[in-house]
Length: 405
Length: 169
Image (cartoon, rainbow over all chains, first blue to last red):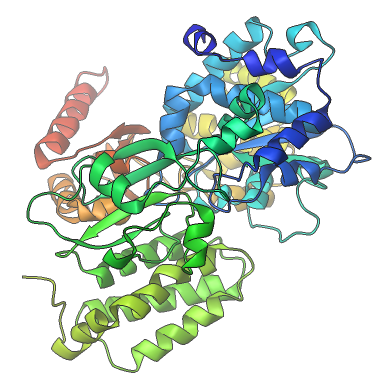
């Protein structure tokens, strides 16, 4: 905590608490155009303003540390590197929205992170940054770490809130939005912990400064980019929004190992579409990717080389989604194993030509699912057919995987 | 509380305190089950009944939770639970052959428990250690950059530790 304070930590808190109004804080975050870092990129200020003025009390903050999108590990890094940045962000978000209690929802494989957070929460409490009468004002806010039992769907905001309350975490489609009716029927703000970590900086240095950090106008600030897969230096890199895909992969992650050529990558975890080498100069920000029909998601870049079979990759991803389906709605529960079976047969050399239109049709059905899991799962499958249909056809024609020796 | 009363006193006190500090008892469902399955070995029917009493839930309501989560074991598991990540990045880094090696050393199939009750091996999705692929959890502790040798060392150590416990052959 000392280290955090020395580099400017908790300065925002002392500038704001007891001096600004909650509305002032929302306004500054909205002016900065902070966009959610959990994958959807929804404007955070706008989300906070979704808490009705005359809304019920008590109100809650739920910080999402359930990251389970394959390829994503930025939140793990953040919790271990800078837990107080998350805590300060949560206190400020509570101040902005009138919340009195916060939960940090942590996935089981981040148990060490959960313990770090619990320890640092205690330290922040002892220092007067948390708990009753923060910095001597009448503003009180408590944070508790909540451990998940472990399942991908719990990262979805409404499912997270259900899980927290001890209900089976099938998502509930809004309205009402959690900001109106969340935990125990009260207004609840759900934000990814990386989103939270941006807030102290915005309030300490101002919206304009924050926008100046980025290379893009529509997506301000910096982003924690993860790179993994076939690269020399997998890792998490904090870079300006709008840094190109090429720069992230080649300069920061050290490019592909000797003998490996870039074939494709997923820009934001498993529920995004494949990008090919023609896209390497795209700016990694929300709007630049949207402009080419893609999503940035969590900005977890997974790199595949020319020796990797993309049918096998897509099969792996589809099996992941099928296993993690909560089972509530038919398109997801039945459609994902169906797709998995078709892909398995294609990969095993048992594919038929008619599987290709069948896959397309089933992907279409997935967009009718109740939540975003199934449409996300459809994304790599659809883009496999869009960008790599030849590879799929070769599996069918040769009656084996052409990528295997 | 017919079943909860049979739990060790210290555990009962700890669980009661957790529940008292939360907004509702149900909020503690995962933590209560995690503690109870540590005691009972897994969420047995008895554990479920004790937990549902403490949480003021019906056994069926609790069943909805116990059967949903990757880290709540509604069926018996060994002393050590190994979760091996099989998502895309670990898969690209040799997951399949490492899993084969692990299973053949333990002489079980995926999802099974060794005859001596020491190890259960389960698949799990992305653990969030893709920068250390391939990875697995052993008793919730992460092990990355796995190789056959590393897996062997981990297993050997756990087997040795179990032999040095009193009452074990």
